[in-house]
Length: 310
Image (cartoon, rainbow, N blue to C red; front, side, top):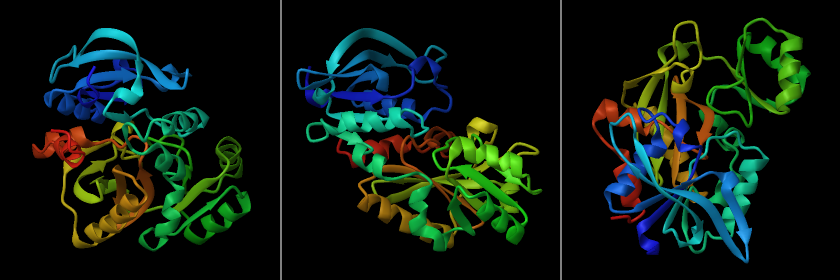
């Protein structure tokens, strides 16, 4: 096996992904188009044996725009340091399993280019990193104190509570009448949370901005379904074509520079009403497939071009 012809992908089970919307599949298809072999595995399939990092992988062939979008060619125990590139693409939440997978992959990052860098993922909380960007955000606090949340609520009257390690719009609370029991249950489950002033313009959607190698590459607008505040595609949101205004571009470029300095190659950030809402997706950014569908532009090409994969 030639090192320079293998892309390994650590992701969720391939049979569970949605080929119509999945960013990992789009990235893998573009690598395959460039004559790279695709080895797919899950974090649970990694073992450290005799000073080598192995994974029980599926060597797959992918097909675009087919119901049966993949074929397993073989299943092999593979020394993943022999891959030229490795993509970390399993979905959050960023719990101990995710954390431990980054420690495993640290061992081979001098031999194999890993995107995003496992140490950088480990150091960047997708919510807490925005502490460095509060000037670009709506009023926001991070706490596990019910009293602090109560004070914040009585100041703004409508708030949103998000688990710090949550993802995909899961377990988000919209509070317009203070409910101590509901909020305390959230804190018992999530511990520290991000609490933010509610922005009513979410009814018109947010903007998911794509950042590749420190550059803002484009955006989509995601509009929640009726009677929802959640714009995530996985929560029923609908994607629309959009452009960034000057203020949105300025904020996005500031974040892009910070992420590049932090050694993050691929990220997605979310904006509402010209404000960063604190979600800086670095573990498994999504939305490239919707962007391609709406604009006819495949940002997977930019992704691999920036890494020198020809």
